[in-house]
Length: 137
Image (cartoon, rainbow, N blue to C red):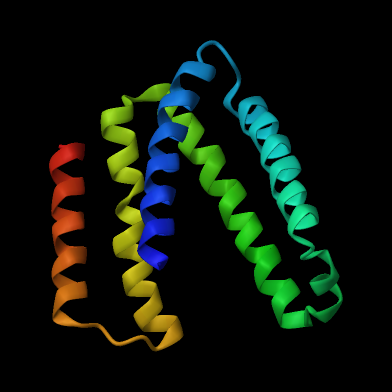
């Protein structure tokens, strides 16, 4: 079941790039990111309230809060950089380079989470890095 959500994530990420490229024409990218963030905030809290998940907020630990805040900061910085890259470059180049995050996530998961690096994961990361370099140069 996880792969269905992962495929949907990929689809929505692709649509994000297309919609953003059209939407940021002639707009400050920081302003565009702020507008997008408000929409995401409304959507996310709407889902939480609709599903009744809000009561779980009281059970969050300091570690949960710390790393969720750090994740939010990383996401925000990623979006700011992504929108600027989209404004300056082509979607067909920016979006694939952005997906270098997959290879980086594999490496960081091995280093910080102790996840095993399988031959399949290593080969996939190498292919992603290679493809990214082809697109950049």
